[in-house]
Amino acid sequence: MAPWLTWTIVALLSWGGWAVLSKMLGNALTPGQSQALSTLGTLPILLVLARPGCRALQTATARGIVLTIAGGIVTCLGNLAYYAALAGGERVATVVPLTALYPLTTIALAVVLRRERLSGIQLAGLALSLAAIWLFNVEGDGHVFSRVIVYALPPILFWGLSGYLQKVATDHLPASAAALLYLGAFVPVAALLAIREPWPMALSGQNWILVLSLGFLLAFGNFAVLAAFARGGQASIITPLGGVYPLVSVPIAVALLGETISRREIAGIVCALISVVALSIEPAARPNSESRSSNNLSNPP
Image 1 (tube, helix red, strand yellow):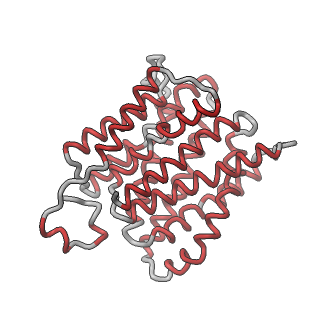
Image 2 (image 1 turned 45 degrees about the horizontal axis):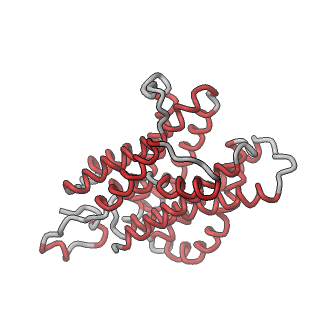
Image 3 (image 1 turned 90 degrees about the vertical axis):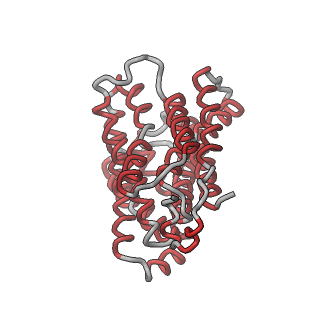
C-alpha cells in the first residue's frame, strides 16, 4: 500500500470517529463553544509535533511557512462561515449538506494550477466519491440548489482552498512542520471564540471527554492528510477520499448509537467503497519518472 494511501485511511478513520462523537455531543454546546473547547484537544498533538516541527522549520522555506499558516487561517475562516450559516435556522438542513462538497474546490485548483492528472479509473473513482459525499449528506427535499447556496458557498470555497494550500505547502516543508503551523493557527481563533462565547455552565465530565476527543481526532485527521500530501498524494485524490469519512462514521453510529441506515446512505457506502479502490490505483509511471524529485510525485504522467 502506498504511504500516501495509508495516511489517507488514517484520516478517514479519525474524521469518521469525529463525526460520531459530534453526534454524541449533540446540543450540549453551541458551535462556537465546540470549536473553542475542542481546540484544547489539539494541544497533545501540538506538543508532540513541537520538537520535530520546530527543528524542521529551521530548513523550511518562507513560502512553505506562509502557505501553511494561510491554510490554517483559511480553514478557520471556513469554520466561521459555517457557523454563520448555521445561524440561519431553517436553512440548516440544506446548508450543512452542501458544505460537504468542498472537495470540488480543491480538485478544480489542483487540476488547473498544479496540472494534476487522473487516469480514467481515478476519474470514475472521483465521480463516485463526489456521489458518495452527496448521498451521505444531502437531504432528499429536492431544493438543494435554491438561494441557500449563497450561505454554503463560503465554507465550500474556504475549506477547498485550504486543502489546496496544504498540498502546496508540503512541497516546501516536512509534514511535521506543516502540521505544527497549520494546527497552531487554530489556537488564536479558539481564544477569540472563547472570549466572545458565553462559558458553558455545568458541563458534565462525559461532555468534556467528548469535546476534547473531538479536537484530538479532528487535528490528528488533519495531520494525517498533511502526511499523505507530503508523501506524494495528489490533492485531487486525497481530498475527495477524505470527504467520504461517513463510510466510517455511519456503521459506527449504527452499531453504537442504534441508528438506522436509509437506502440513500447504503448507496453512499457502496459508492464510497468503490471510489476508495478506484482512486487508490495509481497510473503507471513512465520510465524516466524515477529521476524526478519527490516534490513532483504528485503530478504523474
